[in-house]
Length: 151
Image 1 (cartoon, helix red, strand yellow):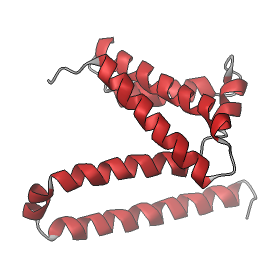
Image 2 (tube, rainbow, N blue to C red; image 1 turned 135 degrees about the horizontal axis):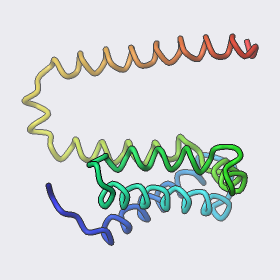
Image 3 (cartoon, helix red, strand yellow; image 1 turned 90 degrees about the horizontal axis):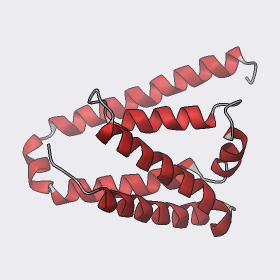
Image 4 (cartoon, rainbow, N blue to C red; image 1 turned 90 degrees about the vertical axis):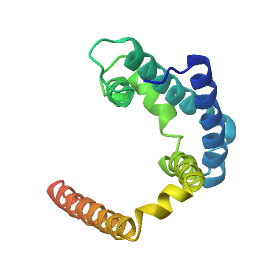
């Protein structure tokens, strides 16, 4: 397994946070200063999850720790969750996705030769996965919204 420097990881998380802050400001009515606390909380949760993934026993991926920490810290009734949720409401999900998808695009772009060798099947498979995910999400949303009386 490749060793990585935690300082570099933190710097990368901060850079992604800065790019997300710009995207958040451009995509919503939230001012740049209002979004900073929420983005710093996200960076802190991500860094804590990465540290836990590296040092906790059990070889559990860091992403599992990040998701678990995020869920626990924002759960209603958890001490401080009201404050965290207040700041997190000012960070748009789409602004985070923009940065992540841009990074994914650059990552795929640099491996274009490998992408060419996968052939047309990967495009068909991707389309089927996108359509299936969309339809699955729509069905679940329809069921939940009907169950809670919103539609």
